[in-house]
Each structure stands twice: as structure tokens, then as C-alpha cells.
Length: 452
Ligand code: PFF
Image (cartoon, rainbow, N blue to C red):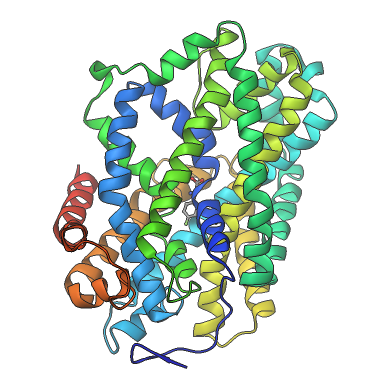
């Protein structure tokens, strides 16, 4: 098949527009929305943070998402192959290597947390939270679990097996089919939990913690936090959007699709905040960050909440599904790279990727207990993987991607892809603005923020 003078093979593709949207939203909506956004928002001045975050998402990150999408769809190739197709004989393929490494790094610790969510779902079903009693007991329950040598590894294995099962089935019959089932459930569940949380006595304090604009809390760190969160939450800079973009049909509207993904992701983050913070405040607890909030504070709240048992189950199913739809997209980056660059069958590629992530994930998991003494740059393996992917690989990947689109691929090709060869009527000023951001604003902003 020949498209745009570019040779492409007949590859598996998404079958419908809805399929593309849910898969992209599935990648974006994940643990980042549920345990980081609500907390960051509260810490950084509530509505003040939302405003900064929205500007980053829609002014800066959306054009980066367009860029990734353009590269994937135009090349119809994996993260590495895309640059062979679009810049033959050059060294730009290094961007693809960054993408593959970033996705491996993220998935290694992400899948461990995915495993924790399975264990906590089991605990919710068995009513373990009710039995645990005080916050201290919940904290001990969590630390005993994550530091034990065997159980978290088994759950990590189970989570990766679920991820691999979906990816093995391919794009249409795997990723599209399952994300289409999971994403609507995810929204319904988080809305139910938010209603329960918002109707608790004393919920108002949580609502004002989240939404009351407090500009005095805005510091330079707020901007850094907002950009980092926007990158992570929109799955930018590590090739997932590029990879999914390569399975999207040539008549799909890239700008619309990316905008819907960003809106869904932001909406979900805000609803997740409404599901968590009002309950935390209603119980007079101070909101902690990350794992502590989700695996210690919330179970304690579920234990004493009317209807808490049901809400706990709903919450951990939500957490599990959100993690799963993101990890699927991360695994597909690696798998499509192995299939196309090493001429592997999907089964073989999934097996190899699964094995590598399983092994790296074991180290991440053990670094919470048996291997906690192993430190590099003062961090244990889990934190190191998190740090390297979020602070090094993703921003550098994003930076190189916008530089490639802005300076190497060029305006004509980018507009050609954004307008589907001129068939979509997109105002010229909008295209020009987007390209200006891709060419100048995005690289400078990412570079400045990385340096500081
Ligand atoms: N966006 C996901 C989240 O918010 O949890 C995490 C993620 C998925 C990051 C896929 C990067 C990625 F490629």
C-alpha cells in the first residue's frame, strides 16, 4: 500500500473513531489522575492550580500531542521506525529509543502499583478494611504488604498477565475491544464514588481545598508540578500517542481526537478529586500524597463510611481498570517496536516484552522491602525508575519530538497531516498558531523547565 509517497505495510488498525478515542483516553487516564492530580491541586492553590494546569494542557501539551500523532499516523510505523520512514538515513531514530526506554521504565513500576490495586480489590471484597481499624493499622497493613517478598510479585505478575493478554489480541480485537468496555465503566464508577463523597457531611472543606483559588500558594514549583503532571497524565513524550496514532485511519481528525482525549483526561482528574478529597476532609484527615492516600487513607475511610464496603470495591476496580488501560498503551509501544524492527510475530514480541517488564518490575517491587538498601543516586529502584522516566526520558522525548516536527518535518507536512491533505477546513490562523507553539514555545518551555 502506498500513502503520501510513503510505503506502509497493511497493519492492524483501530476500527472506529470511538475506538481511537477510548484507547487514547484510556492511556491518558490512569494512576496519575487518581492519586496525583487531586493532591497536587490541593497543595498548589486549588483553582489557581487548575488554571495553570489547563493552560499547560491546552496551550502547550496539546500541540505536543498533535506532533506525536502526526509522526505516528504519517509514518504508520512504530516509535523507532517512524523516523526511518520520515527522516531516512538520519540519526533521529534516537527519539524512538527514548520512547521505548521511557515506556519500559514507566511500565516497570506502574505495573507493580497495578498489582497492588488487585491485592487491595481482594482486601475490599474480603472486608479487610473494616477489620483493620485505626489509621496506624492501615499503614502497617500497607507497608507489610508492599515489603513482603512474594505476594506483591505475584500480583505484579497477574497485572502484567492481564496487560499482555489484551495486547496479544492486537489492536482491533484486543486494545480497542477491551478499552471500549473498560472506559465507560471507569467514568460511571468514579461518578458514583464522587456523588457518595460529595454528599457526606463536612464534604465542603474538601471541595474548597480543591477549588478555592489561592494564588498565594502558587510558586515556581507550581509551574513545574503542573507541567510534569500534564506530561505524565497525557502520556506524552514516550511514544504511546505516536504508536496509537500509527493505527489511526487517514481520515481521522487529529486535532479533534487529541482535544477530546485531553478534555476527557482533565475531566476525569477533576471528578477523581471530587471522589477523594471531600471524603478525606469529611473524616478530618489530612490528604497525603501518592500511595499513602490511595492505599492507607482511603481504605481507612471506606471502613467507616456508610456503604463504604461497596464504594471500596468500586474504587479499587476503578483504580485497576485505569491502570490497566494505561499499561496496555505502554506495552504496545515496546511490542510494536519489537514486531516491526525485529520482524517478530506479535506472540513472540509480547512474550519478550512481558518477560523484560516482569523482571524489572520484580526489582521495583523488591525495592520496597528486601532490596530497599540498594540505592542509586540516593533513590531506591522504584523511585529511580519513576524519577528517570518522569524527569528525564519523557521531557527529553517530548522536546526532541517537537524539535523534529517543527524543524525537520516542517510546516507543509505537518499541515498536510493535520488537515488530512487539505480536506478538513481548519482555520489558517489556528494551524499557524499550533505550528508556532510546536516550533518555538514548546521546545523553549520544556528546556527552561528542565534546566531549572
Ligand atoms: N497517563 C497515565 C496516568 O496518568 O496514569 C500514565 C502514562 C501512561 C504515562 C502511558 C505515559 C504513558 F505513555
